[in-house]
Length: 89
Image 1 (cartoon, rainbow, N blue to C red):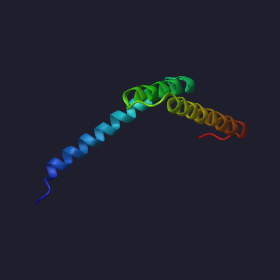
Image 2 (image 1 turned 135 degrees about the vertical axis):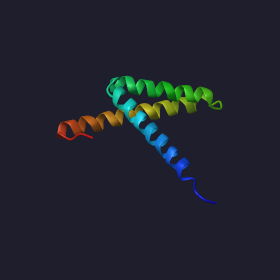
Image 3 (image 1 turned 30 degrees about the horizontal axis):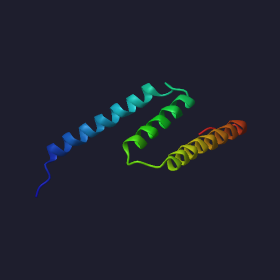
Image 4 (image 1 turned 180 degrees about the vertical axis):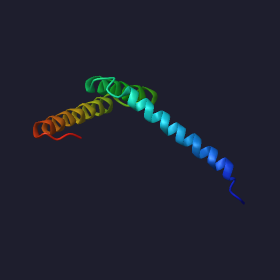
């Protein structure tokens, strides 16, 4: 079975354009939200996913939310430490 070179070229070009559009979208939206707002949106997305997923008991949900908040607090401490040492990510 021979490879259709023209079909391959078209698929490659569409993939390249898609990557380019995604990059442009990321650049245009960079810095649009503060880190706290971006985190809040992420938590809201996680909560939406939980609502759409099979039912959890209240303890599991509270524990997962606490774990996310703890993770975010650790990231904030790490970034504060890096800023204090003059390092950036």
